[in-house]
Image (cartoon, rainbow, N blue to C red):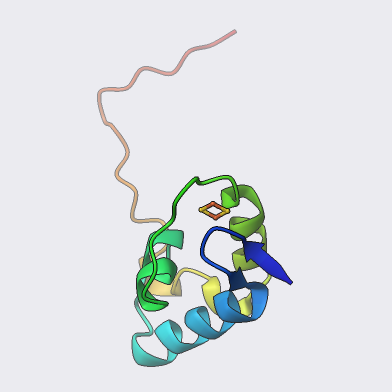
Length: 83
Ligand code: FES
């Protein structure tokens, strides 16, 4: 199935790129931009992004490596808002 009609990228291309990136770097953070780059292409209109990301999420290799999860810094000065 063609996902990106501007660049003729199929769901199989997306999965192949994700699998290749994960196999070559277990710590890689895989983004749509990196997939385009891996395929030697650049996005044009961006109209496919919602479907593109949906297809990415169907790949088990997309998950963020366990040791990189939960690294988002929390702001110690942030005040909790109570209702
Ligand atoms: S359809 Fe993918 S960039 Fe236009």
